[in-house]
Length: 498
Image (cartoon, rainbow, N blue to C red; front, side):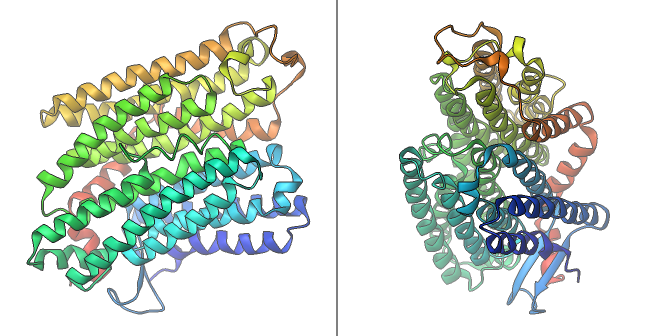
């Protein structure tokens, strides 16, 4: 048994404690947090390599055997999620050097950021539902603290809406846990796979599945449960928006994929049929919402919703190719979406506003910033050969293979509408001349900060690599899909062939 699966959780918690100790020394806080995030990235890379080369890694905390103790498990799906989390954590903490001031640092920015990273990694690596609930609560507390850290009225307004709806999701989650435990007598997810097959009341089990679908749907931001997202993600500093956009909804998507490929697979025509309808409507409503706005971060927030629809589409189709597409899409989207939020902050830094009507001329004054926007923006839209093209192509092909023509058409239409939104941002912020009455902000004299350019360039480079050399990333996604469609692999890794 290796202790490696626990390190992505323990390390950020230790860094959080150290930064709290140095809460009155902002420079030390940043150096400690940056070093910790780099070390966290290295630990997650080691775990990723171990899983890819040696298969699923498990750890029984306190040496209590499963299903009685706390299980940590790193399979291909969870290790992909943990790896990208570490990448985004390092990029955002690097970016924070240029944006987060000493007042927010003294208020606990780095402490909350590292607690958030620990909670996200814990949710990806846990092997039982109760600890998934615990890590969800850790994430909720840290993310709410980050949302209101600036202590501005707009942030409190968005933060309160965010936490209230997520508390409702938590109530549903814990209710579902109670029902499922009452039906099966276990909360270990591998053991649940076996236990649900013995349940004598399938109607109650289906109702329980609907409760979990709703709880995770709120956290993922699927239709009609996404209304909390676009009112909160545009309010905090950009570094916070970026990490929340890159991670939080994907934890909900991950939880849904895990449970509806391992536990709730007894009535696929009903549960996954509901997911298919929700996925298509989520894609359409999200992209139409984005088309209606002219504020940089609000547009990006609505596109989180539409892109989550693609991920749920892969789960709903529930074929090996579709699941591989969903995993690849999550990998691509986490990087691209976080980077677009970081770029919005860079555009605001050099132009003075997030409102597209007040922006302009960025291509002429900062051509490198324009290039950095172009890569993730048109990857999100699905332009070849960028990473989003391959992700959408796999999902469209998977839809066509099982004759889900409506889903395939929706995926293509949403891709075209996403192109419209990205083109609108490009035309307004980068291509058109700067409006003469835009607050007298001299764009020619404002230059990008190196601490902003470094992480954005790193994430843009990753997007290019995934797009130009997709084969190894698709291979890992296909292995994750193989494990998801053969749950006995997961069960045997945890229970030892029980």
